[in-house]
Image (tube, rainbow, N blue to C red; front, side, top):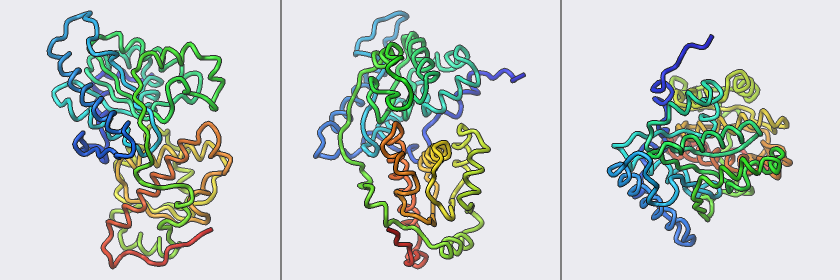
Length: 347
């Protein structure tokens, strides 16, 4: 039997990760070529003001005065959605607020049940949900019920981010057309703010063929030089570890890592393995883990080409963009004398 868990135990870890623990609205720099970025920044500042005002004037069963109490930040990867989400969290320090990914939320509901999870969040003024996605029918029903009941508490506000418009959630992953009522309920809960723009990391598939991939010998030499604070796995070893551990624990693992070395990354032809790596990379990125790689293929080819055009295409693109940034950050942080010139040129 699973021991009873108090709501405060559930919520304690739901805070921004290392990469986003210091961001603010002031540190968000809109691209002037895409006015929707400035508009999103302005809208989120106004949203924070409305949450604070509502908190001061809150009365039971009062009607919302500033539009819906839920905002959905939609846009491609690398346009700053998560930055704005975390900045919203940080802008309300005197409020009860929680910050988590949709995957974390799904696991919490699966583990505790819907009503205990709702109880854990029912006292919140703000719930921030990053990477809102629907991968299957169960998640769709769960998300619809959770949002409907959570927003039944009049003081609760929700901000979510996603790469997909609410009305398009689940497309290409399951028979989403059969669940339009549930998806429609989810969409109806939110005011949607669409953010245009290019990935601020300025990475494209072609650029990723040449990035900072080390030879096996250089990777291992660098690892041994930094061994006290680093972990090295061959790709098969890491893939086996990720299969053994539930993805909800990937964040805890990443939070304990300073530097990770992956030796012999190669093309992944099993989508379950690929999606586990995507989720793990998200956690490495959030925790700013130093990452170094050797690979037998160009970086874009670690995922089977067919994956780039399916229902999870955006996940894979985001993953490659984040891998590139992590590796580049690692290289930039090294003293000039430790940077290795003999990087692999593949393709």
